[in-house]
Image (cartoon, rainbow, N blue to C red; front, side, top):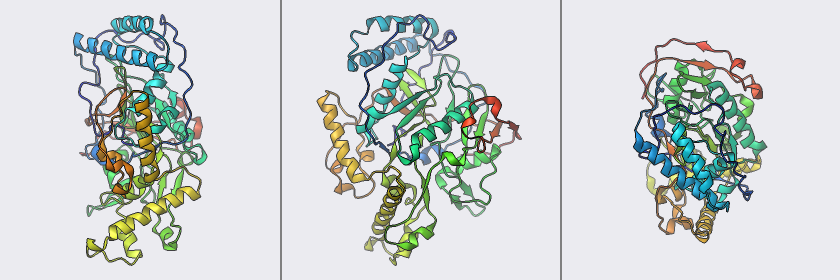
Length: 472
């Protein structure tokens, strides 16, 4: 699932002049709103998280050390009021909470006083789940109600964000029984933006550029790797094809910092084939949980710029794309050679045969190690079930055909043989605009600190040279 990562919604990130948000969690004086009803818990949610990272990494650079939000005047305030009213009304309607009038009066008063408003925990959880439901590029939305929401809006410091991200990984991994989870960090506020995570996913493999222009590892992450090394990350020793990158995090008013991820927080699966014994010798592996981390979450006009989210993998995301794409690990020629297939001409369909065996190997490897994964045929059927369920509830289901249809055996899946309406509605996830460069940063090593990483004082900071090479 792409979570609209290819889109930058026009005017979606409000900018409102006015006083800063009152201290505390912005609930003083607000009407208590009872929790929404318990959502049905389902057990799966594939995402196509690895399919557009190159678009971001190709333009990746560091954020400015300090920045402020522009003021758009009274029209922005009016826009926020409209967005808030639409969301609060939706929340009350779908959860059968009665008329929203009283809650709207408090929200309107809050916006007029502070230029923003604070969602209740129930509103935040509902908004995050509906944002998933509205993501037109996701084939796994049947499971939107199962999303576990970690409310971490009080967290703003980069070391704490990194530590909470590690906890997210552990909770989502769940010993291999992957759970869909979102962690929502501090929102943007007038004159005070929230934090950001620059990595496209919490777990990413490094891509080391060599002198001859080749890349060791994942080419999609070459720019991110260069930046991480400029921030002080030493890289793999020796350099490897599957070295896990640190998290690059920026809190408001500060430089980007790099934070290593503890090795025991990342579950990886060695890729083997059920029939080809030589397959294990290719040395392939992949991480278990795809946590998308470079999008922002828009709920009722409030922007949460750091809200890492995960489902679980569909085999084609790893086999057809991450390991199979010629611009990624490019394993199809190698597999074809081991299969004894000629690559001199495409007419013998060597790519198709190699891709099928690669996807089979991914499915086999995750399944035999008891790590949750699904296949594109199963999810195609389930997506049509999701559409039918949405229609029964009187809701239109946005869908982007080019992303819903899987990259392997496309016409053999039922999602291929129909059209969809693709439209934008909030709550939703959107890509951040490409960030600008900066010249100072630091590296925090979290690898040996495990789950104890929760306070800024727990992490030793090392300042580095301000000279960074040009990137992008």
